[in-house]
Amino acid sequence: MVRKTILSKAQLQRRVVELGAEISHDYAAKPLVLIGVLNGAFIFMADLVRAISLPGLQVDFIRVASYGKSSESSGTITLSKDVELDLAGKHVLLVEDIVDTGRTLAWLVEAFNRKDAASVRICTLINKAERREVDLQPDYAGFDIAEGFLVGYGLDYAEDFRYLPEVAHLEL
Image (cartoon, rainbow, N blue to C red):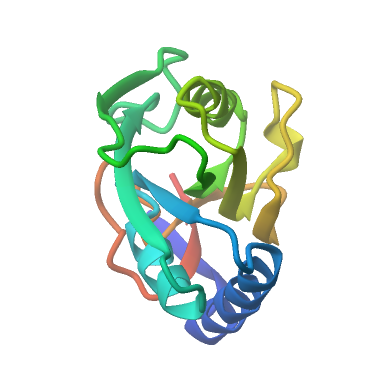
């Protein structure tokens, strides 16, 4: 397997700070809950939380899977860890590592709307719009990347490479 760096650690840090400022502005004086989608979003989410300056910001995580241990989506979405916070009347920002087909995020938006959230929006590190299979556009996107299998900064291949401080293209 060959890796080629696509986004450096410095590029990632700059963009996360920009996203944090934008989110802080958009949600000023609103009760916001960031919900990270495990496992891929945990590094991005940790950095993003530190870049948001909102009193009362709440954080929770969910675990959802559609890939299993391969690089191709199974098409089946399973939720193995649900949110533990009460979301009624709160604004929810789903934080994801990568949005490609959009199926998982569309499913999650619908699920969280049923929990009486005031709003449900999406923040993703990587937006791969050319792979989209449903009508879904992230509200906040760190980077638009057209192609390639990406690893690092939380993104994995078969649970490996999450530890990389940059995002790299992995040739399988």
